Length: 387
Ligand SMILES: *Cc1c(COP(=O)(O)O)cnc(C)c1O
Image (cartoon, rainbow, N blue to C red; front, side):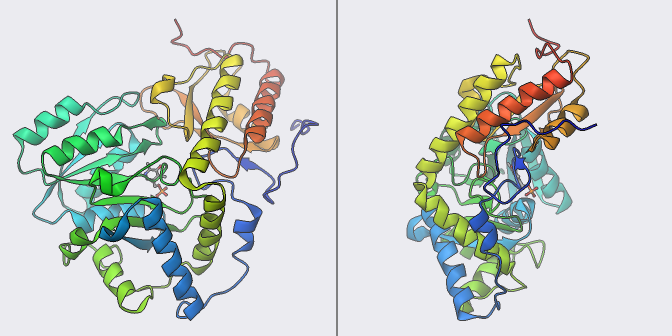
């Protein structure tokens, strides 16, 4: 029989039955969901203006200024990553991908799939990329035209040192493309200062919109040089940009409701203090989560100095009474949905601290975890490899 919800189970103000402690799609505010209660005509002047405001605001969040533009794209985050790589790395180019998790590996797979030249520099999932090796590699291989890096590698939750990576890439005069999917809007990023040609992200992570939309912030000069590069019609960011600039409209059916919700999400992001405000709340959420879980005996994969305040990987407890599926189901019955692990190296699970969650939500989530462990008679949450 499923356990009864604990008495202190919070009324969820977001209109959901459950809190999503995941990396996205995640818990959105009620007002973001309510913004979808209107059917927009895609050629309507009001919708065209809304689309324009969203694009301008996203360039501002990236500190892009006049050298950059925002190209939105239908689909999940992977669609825009694939569009960014296929549009900006020409068929004659070669991409070096810094891989320390599944999302870096996915960029390599995209390049193989679309038949473009790719090499990788791989580090363990709990380590940042080796910048000395990157420096050497770029010096030795002039054929590498572009470097791709993941800002926060959601696989582990590690914060990759994007400024230091950008400095090495700039030193060698190569073009930098960033997957900032799970960081954009919450971790500071100044695209102009990084000198990156493009940053890709989506509506449904730290910006707290609903899923269905990705976007790239791209240097105008890089886009202008990218005509005819794309491997695909629908994933051609150059064509998408040209069309949108010419009449303000999307080439193909836009996700109108998603965009309406996204504008509301961006208004709420601004009201919270933009990137700095969101960073503050997520940092507090993350600290409360890690502290509470450590008190219960859990171990994090990462040392605190490598941890981004986005999603935390916990090692699977060695206690035989700990069955992950049972833990997951019972916690979900209490109103908290967590996330399985994605590491290749060690059994683990993940808990996100992003979305419309505040420190009190995290405190109650940790209390629900403690109760779930008691239900399951788990007494020891240390990992198998603990010293
Ligand atoms: C979520 C995410 C993506 C995109 O994933 P989708 O499931 O396609 O939305 C890409 N990169 C990173 C780092 C992510 O966290």
